[in-house]
Structures are given as C-alpha cells and as structure tokens.
Image (cartoon, rainbow, N blue to C red; front, side, top):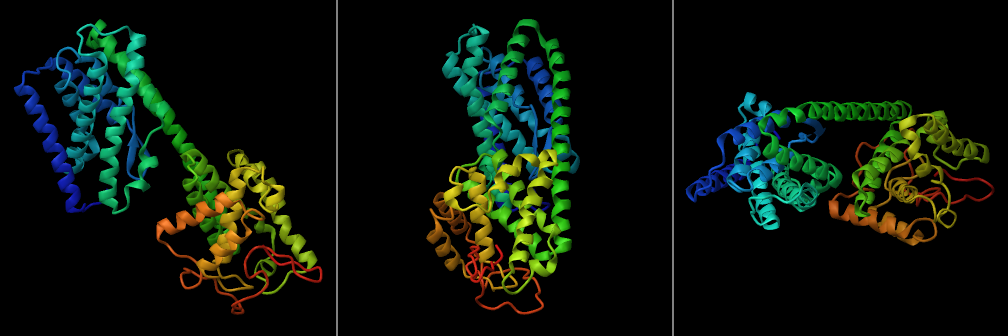
Length: 447
C-alpha cells in the first residue's frame, strides 16, 4: 500500500476506526454486554486465522477469517447481537505484519473494516431470525446465513476497494472483480462459521480446536495452488523472453495483444479465470515464430510464396508446442483458428475472435518493417469496416470501448519503444491496413 500513503487514506482509516469505536461505545451505553470469555475465544481465533492468509497479489491476502465473524453473529444473537460481532471483527487489527511494522493506518483500517462489516451483517441476521433466543434448526440457519454472508462480504469489499482506489489513485472499477472472492468460497466460509457458532453454543468453547487443523490444511492447499500458478507464470515469462531474444518487436507485440485481449474480455464480462485463459492464449499465439528466420519476419517488402508458407508454418508449430505443455493445452482452441476468416469461424471460441481483433489492432497501430504505424482512428475504422466479414463485430466494439474508456492512445504519434529497422519503413506499404490482404501475382503479404 506504499510507504507514504496520501493524507486522504489516513483520513479514511481514521474516520472508519472512529465510527467503529463510537458504535461500540454507544452499544455499551444502551446495555449490550457480550460474555467476555466468548469475545476473547473468538477474537483470538480470528487473529490466528487472519494471520494464516495467503498472498494473492496487489498487496492483498485471502484467508478463511470470514467464518469467525459469522460464528460470532450466531453466538451473540441472543446476548449482544451488535456489540459481540463488532468486537470480534475489530480483532482483525492484530495482523502481525502490520503490528511489527507499526503501520497504525492499516491496523485501524482492518479493525474498522471487519468490525463494521460484522455489525452490518449481524443486523441483517437479526431481521431474518427476529432476535429469538431459540435459534432455528441448523438447515434453516444455513439457508438464512446466505444473505448474511453476502452482506458481510459486500461491506468488506466496499471498504477495501475504496481504500485501494485512494492509495493507487486509480478508479474503483479497476479493483471490483479483482478483490471480490467467488460466491462459492464465500458461502463455504459462511456455512463453516454458522456451524462453528452453533457448535459453540451447544458444546462450549473447546469446539474451536476442531476447526484449527482443517484451517491449516486448507491454507496449505491454497498456498500450493498459488505456488503452482506462479510457476506457470514464470514459464510463460521464459517463453516470452525467448521470443524477445529472437525478435524484440515480436515480444512487444504479444504483450500488447495480451493487454488488448484482456481489455476486450473485461468489456464482454469475462470472469477472472476466463481472462487468464485469454491472456495465456495471446502471449503464446506467436510462439511458433521462434522457428521463422528473422530475415522473413522483418522483410520490408512482399513475401514470396515459399516465404509465406514458411511464415504460416509458425501457426502449426504454436499449436503443437502448446499441446505438449499441460497447463497451456487449454489455450489451443483459442489460437487454432486464429487465421481463419470470420465466415468460416463464426462458431469458433469467443477467445479466438477476441485474439483476431486484438492482433489486427496491434498490427495496424505498430510500426513494422513494411509500413509505419497507422493512427488509432484509421485502425478503428478498418476494424469496423471488416466487422462481420473478417472480425466479430461485438469483439471490435468491445475493444474500442475499452481503449476509449482507458484514455490511452495507440498508433502513429503514440508508439513506445519502436524497434530499429535497417531500412526506415515507408508511410504506406504492402498490407498497410495490417489485415493480411493477398498480394498480386501469387505473392502474399505478412499477417
């Protein structure tokens, strides 16, 4: 979150913490008094679970800590439905990394975030259960916990995305899907919390020990998954570096295509797992160019028929190579039909059509050996002109919307790190629109 956070973040954390403390004092004044032993037991368990989190990037962690506030909502429903969950949630401030570094802003934020989220969720639980000292049967309690879990997670999500937006000076929309945990995971943690609260009421505080071992096992399982994912990312980076060592332009091209493809997928409402698949496919769609000689890749003029066939062979090599890499085999359908015209691949995976649009846009807005970069406006016009014949119209419009919303410009006048060519590329040339048109006299241009 940065060593010197902005004053607005300090103010945000302070205001949230003051609100949480103020609500706690008000609830004490009106007579709520949860059993201190239960607060201490669940509070300590919350600290243990919260410090077992696993880093998932963007300076965030994921843990099973949600289940503890949910358990406190069940446990304190009859005695202190507001103050009990609030105090247990505020124990999140005892996150050891923040305590060791003396980061009081994060301590206040975590304390207020989880405390207020638990308080809001407990209010929803009270509306459903109607504050009856006798809780409903466990199956009904689990069903009633679904909206409670979602409300608690939504409140936590709102507090977190506002904090991340303030710290990064980036819009909230960039963090929404990234921070939100899948509904399935939320409900699993919520159900476990309900079960823990119910068992605590029935069997006493010793029951918490039954939950600690499964939490450690779940934590290690998820950490192993993230380590495997990190290994996959490292393997991809190695392959991209291999491309870069052969041809610096090609490496920059696949990275930009990946950015455009992921942006298009976001506009089309893809979930994170599908966006990851699109990104992998974009990064790997040109990996077969490792076998293409540089004199063909960077030839200023038209390719001969034999050169064209040798260039096209890279598509087959890309597919065959990826088939043999287990974690990349799933991207093969996305790149297999990449060169087929729209009329013949309208039923191809949507990822394939996204890649075709992203690839063409970068080709047009990048300087190549045979032609300088076109302007962004010309590239948009060409994509729209070929929508429905060479490109999927929805993908074209999604990419254009994403680029315009980002405020970033591409193409002539806005290029970065332009490759050095032996001969300066002409302003216009073969395939100047970057759409792979056939050349005359049996010769073809590069795609």
